Amino acid sequence: QVQLLESGGGLVQPGGSLRLSCAASGSIFNIAIMGWYRQAPGKQRDLVAYITTSGSANFADSVKGRFTVSRDNAKNTVYLQMNSLKPEDTAVYYCHAYYADRGINYDYWGQGTQVTVSS
Image 1 (cartoon, rainbow, N blue to C red):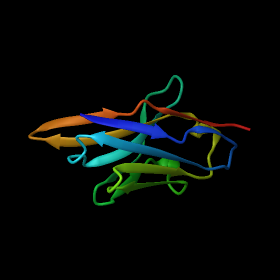
Image 2 (image 1 turned 45 degrees about the vertical axis):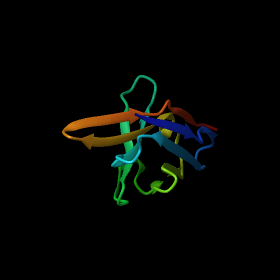
Image 3 (image 1 turned 30 degrees about the horizontal axis):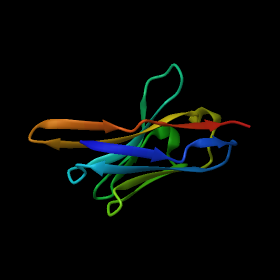
């Protein structure tokens, strides 16, 4: 089992910045990918960004150039730095961890943290 604990959400004005953190605990030695999804009211949960253990990252088109994702393997923590925030970035942000073991896929989710971009 893997537990994910997010922090760093809140209210920010358009153009502002926030940094989300997600600390993993439990059976973490197998985690291959960590990342972030978000879900706005009435919409599906969508990928924002992910990063592999080797540091390879991928981003949704809507956040490219504004968001960065990083990972501290020693602290088992993944970060999402969000700059130039827009009202459409408002959503609940969920941390996600993934690994595969002997043909079985394992997905774990955090409890979510609210990000609101508004003046």
